[in-house]
Image 1 (tube, rainbow over the protein chains, first blue to last red):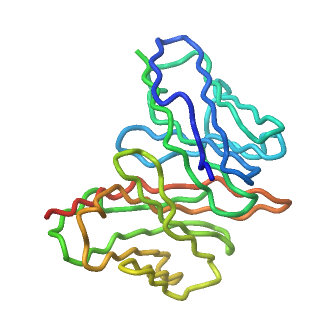
Image 2: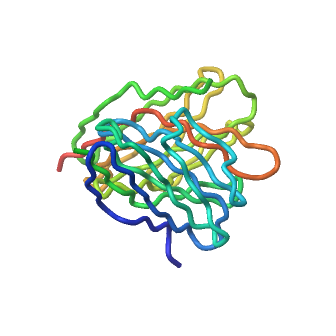
Amino acid sequence: DAGVTQSPTHLIKTRGQQVTLRCSPKSGHDTVSWYQQALGQGPQFIFQYYEEEERQRGNFPDRFSGHQFPNYSSELNVNALLLGDSALYLCASSLRQNIQYFGAGTRLSVL
Amino acid sequence: AQKVTQAQTEISVVEKEDVTLDCVYETRDTTYYLFWYKQPPSGELVFLIRRNSFDEQNEISGRYSWNFQKSTSSFNFTITASQVVDSAVYFCALSEPTSGGGADGLTFGKGTHLIIQP
């Protein structure tokens, strides 16, 4: 049974570019949440998708957007990249209110 | 607003020692969940425990134990007879259940880097 998978593993972009990160949830899970983890910090909640809709959002600007597909997989898009967007982006999946299980993350470097 | 404080940035102990990681939380809600996650160098957060705010019973799982005290808003984590493999960053987190289905986003502390020396 595959866990939460994220792609790509690593990514290097330059300021002003756009990036798309992908997440496949654990089998049987219907909810996907995205987190940003800066170096040496705890993960910060970006947003959560359930039934293909953004149902909750953390304190992140509109440059951060997402999508959930009918198969429950999800994408995180970041526009107009800033140096400060460099971080580990973690995806977590869950079945409604149950426990969130995390993927290994995508390491984004913005130069 | 929710907040989780892990005052210990880094702890270093020798193998076989017991170690306690502290977690203090703030929330205005009466119903909430508390969590501990482990993050090894690989980066993936590994779930350890979830505790409901209505259940203050302490829990033990092998060498791990958790002490939940609502009176002091604390949810501390103790590792007994620590091992080198326990070395990782440990995060305490808080969330609230939502109506209509779906899990709430987690609010994490900054983490405690635990180093177990052989």
